[in-house]
Length: 204
Image (cartoon, rainbow, N blue to C red):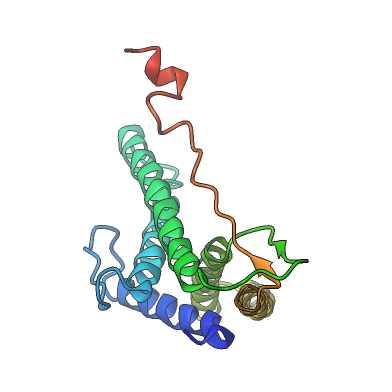
């Protein structure tokens, strides 16, 4: 793994996922993951595919005239999507834990505010924001002011992507050198658990 270029590696996979999705632009099109199963590339592609589908589900559910039952069905689907997204983040972190398992921590090593995979989660969302903001700049059915505003926002998003990429690569270098170390906390979501959500266990 080339940790100095890992963020670029991720973004290339995210962009491929986004482009493949938009070939059909349909939330029900099955995923076509081109990478070997259980590889980090496979996890990254799957992660972004979930984000991409959910992006469009969030658009659909905001239609003013949407049927309430359809909106509820989509909301349930988004809930499952969030759970799948969290599961994949944990798989990506498991990859990093294995990758750095032999690194000896320095005496003054510190833990980061978030794990590498959660930072990469934000990088995936940024790739989506950049794609869709770019598409807004290509519209021909709106006023020039809208296009100009979207171009300004696109510039900021690209700067944010560059800064986040630099931070991710630096974090991975710090972990590889023992200056930082990883700690992961398994998901503690309560609303999906029938044993922890009182609206569910009180109905038993």
